[in-house]
Length: 398
Image (cartoon, rainbow, N blue to C red; front, side):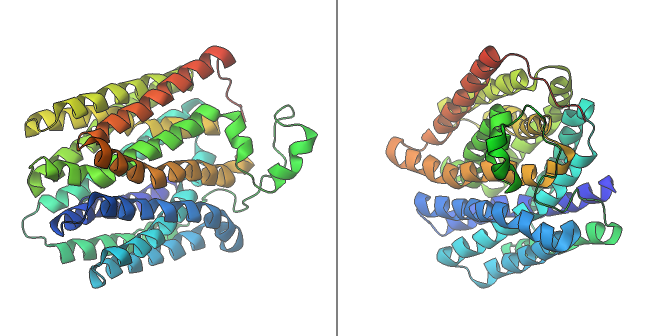
């Protein structure tokens, strides 16, 4: 059951790996200005924000499997339309639809994973899930290095992957967690005063933020940084003079780095306060980003090493933040919590590319990774201060 769920998400990530590189390269070939590139990247995240509100409601109405199928078909259709409507304005609208679809499928997948993962191994389980997804992303990205595949073929392959992702989920019908978007009655007795009960019943995400603020700050920063790097990074590298194959190679180093360290970081978070782990990983991401900004137009090998270092930290944060948030939630809350986590990520992801491209416009090409380093440094400081003043984290045992 769990394998079918992860397999379906991994097939989606192959499509994402293709489009993460293909779309920015096509915009660069069309000489689109940086703000247009940022608008297309942010449109995906704007759709993500809208999907966070719509996903749990659709899951409540038609169930997790039905919602996954509906979102998957919408993503496939929107991907095909990218080829039929090669216009940046049209792409903004299509990427909004694709973002909505993607968050819907992730809500089903990650809420199911949270419901099945034991507390004592939650970091490890989410890390393995992220590793599988990142291997799939790498596979999709490396398809761009195949000389026989043109843009139309790659777009069609991405659409096909969205459609094929439905097969394992619909055929095996894994239990993707409770279909209700509202918690039932498992709130800790001391978690909220009586006056906050209405907010809990209405599915407000703020109660989750109050329980684990570092987790939500981490997801926000991951959105602010990672989407800027994956959405603008290819154009950034192309501006440094790298070829298309070189861009694909350096960008794939991000995923390779996260795959190498995701599991050890997850295991460490199961044995230590997750806030300390978040602090250390965010600090490493800050240092790596500032080194990239300093390196500028270095050799391809140097850039590959630095991007791999950044990916090993920056791309490993999300799983630890999700595990930390689920440590303080009841089993009945997996769907609304998944939506709240994804919403925090999406808000950051919607703003990240625009903030990054604005920084590049004002301060020059290298400001992309100076911005990423500043955001990661802020998370490092917040996690350290929260751990210092709040004391050790005590996960909820269910």
